[in-house]
Length: 186
Image (cartoon, rainbow, N blue to C red; front, side, top):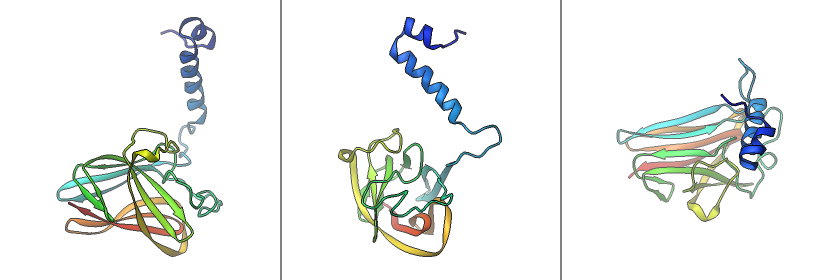
C-alpha cells in the first residue's frame, strides 16, 4: 500500500490528492476516542404506515448548557434539524405532511424556526452536509404546531407519535419546545 503524504500527493495527483489526505487526517482527529460517545450521535425515527416503514435519519445534538431557541438555533434562519449530515426522510409511499403532498422518495428535512413556531421544509436535495441548503430544491414548507414543555429536553429528538391507522404525528423536540405536524399515508 502506498503511504499518502503531502509530498507524494503533490508530485502525482496535485491538489485533489492533497485535499483527500487532509480530509482523512482531520476526520481521524475529530472522531471520538474508542469508547467515547460522539457529541451528536446518529439517531433514527421510524413508523409503519400502510405496512411500509418511513424513516428519518439524523444526528442528535445536546444542549450542554447552551441556550437553543433563538441562539444556537436562530430564529428566521433555516436550521439543519439536527447536527452533522443533513437529516434524511425516506418514504416508500406517498405522504401528506401537514398540507404538503410528499411523493414516495428520499428527502432532506430542514426547519425554519421563529419566535411563534416553525415551518418544516421538505427539500429534494439529498446526500449533502446539513448546512448545505438550496432553497430552489424545496418541495414545500408547512407550519408546525409548537407546544411549550414544562421541563427542558437535553438531547434533540425526532419521533413519530400517536399512530392511528394510516396516520401519525411527527415531533421535533428540544429544549422546552415540541413542534408537531400530522403525517398521513396517501
